Length: 251
Image (cartoon, rainbow, N blue to C red; front, side, top):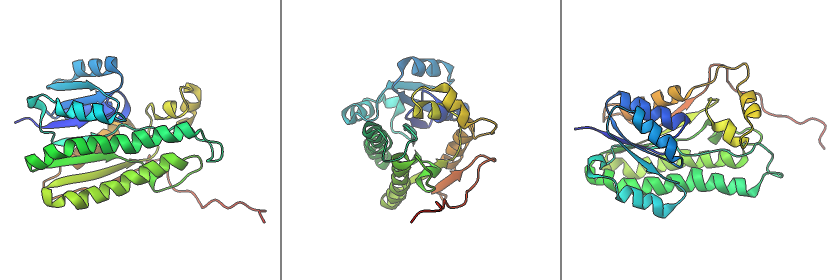
């Protein structure tokens, strides 16, 4: 019997690569995202059965309706990949746009909660499931300008751990994947379409790729049932840790 993976934010980057990775291994996919044309294009590229849903994860009613309306052939979901998320801006907390903060919270936290809560009953009824959440190293390692983005990813980390504690007796596995510097549309979204500024983030650096992240997602979701991968933190080979910031001359 075919296994099914449900991927949010599948129209680009990590989500798109993850859909292709699972499809290459014979899985059927449920792909969701806000851009219908991209979903249709991805569906045509996949070899195995695929169900595409145009979906904004911040819309609780739409998420619940989409999960409830899954065709029988695609339910229950074996693996949920909560990939939809974004960063907006890189300014200091005193100058950030409060609407950017709100959108990050609504997408990175509330969207993840809505989707997880909608899918979990299927997994519990099936007696098995795996939730893979896309966090970020920014949820643990702070950097200037990460303010609310990093805080939302810290939520993803702790929610993942608490989710596992709640569901271990129900045979539900949970993994938090935390990438560092990775090239996708992430920076272009963060800088609101400024391609030149986004490209500067990766200048003269060999970053992680969406394929690297997809490999980690697939690997963690396909371990033997006696193994749960709690968390994977990934960095580019050219990325490491910096000294603590010390501002001199302050009184």
